[in-house]
Amino acid sequence: MSDKYREAGVDLEAGYESVQLIKSHVARTKIKGAQDSIGAFGGMFDLSVLGMKEPVLVSGTDGVGTKLMIAFAADKHDTIGIDAVAMCVNDVLVQGAMPIFFLDYLAVGKNNPKQIEQIVKGVADGCELSECALIGGETAEMPDMYSADHYDVAGFCVGAVEKSKLLDGSTIGEGQVLVGLPSSGVHSNGFSLIRKILLKDAHLDIHKTYEDFDKPLGEVLLTPTRIYVKAIKHLLEHVQIKGMSHITGGGFYENVPRMLKDGLGVKIDVTSFPRPRIFDLLKSTGNMEEKEMFNVFNMGIGFVLAIDKADVDKTLSLLNDIDEKAYVIGEVTNSGEVELTW
Figure 1 (cartoon, rainbow, N blue to C red):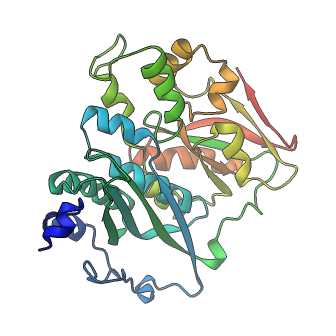
Figure 2 (cartoon, rainbow, N blue to C red):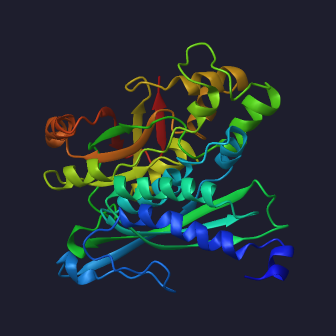
């Protein structure tokens, strides 16, 4: 125990308590290959158990952004960790890699063990949904850097794919079909604009349930980012996916081209999939143009696949078998641009 350190704002005893509280959440994410390393200086994973001849590691890192401000205002912290995992694993997934382990970084103004347990619970939930192990992390108490009730959470994941199955966009071509997997809402992007439109300008109350919604605004906004690992893993066992894109900040215009070779484009029918009501509220309240909405938000599609026309029915059927909705939303073109039609 260090009284001087506590006087400076860092409570070592609370830190030890936090570690004890999160151990059960970490334990439930253990998968084959994960080594018992919580408390060690480094997390460990045995790659040999994957049985790959030429494994390629694919890594991704991200945070949750200012969606955290909604969590602070709502005093709800048990799902934000899912977002931290989702933003990383979905990125790794687009290259055909299955996530194998995740590490989180949590910076807090004051070590509140119960709150930290809730955050890490969310991280563990996300890892379970991703079928990857939470093999380590870091919690840093940083008084003066953060206020006592604020924190930041980020992380990174590592995935693996057989070299021969790596998706690099080289097999995407004109005429292939785009299949979209629905988002759960706004996910974890655009929250600086969302907060400006709904909270700063319109002064809406996150604790109030507004017309056309079945729960308070704060809960709608805190709906966790969907994790697409299980759906894509199921598809890759039966269908040759040509390319994938995770629709994050920058919407359709920025993210879909990231899976394409130079010279290719896409044509997307935005009436081909349902739009969560939160986007209608943002558009009307913020007086935003339709094109701008698609340049910022996912608008209801969180993940896009490019497949051959011959595989469309099979793809939709396979996803239906595991209760995953999917929509044919467009096609690959040689236009070199993203064309949206209404």
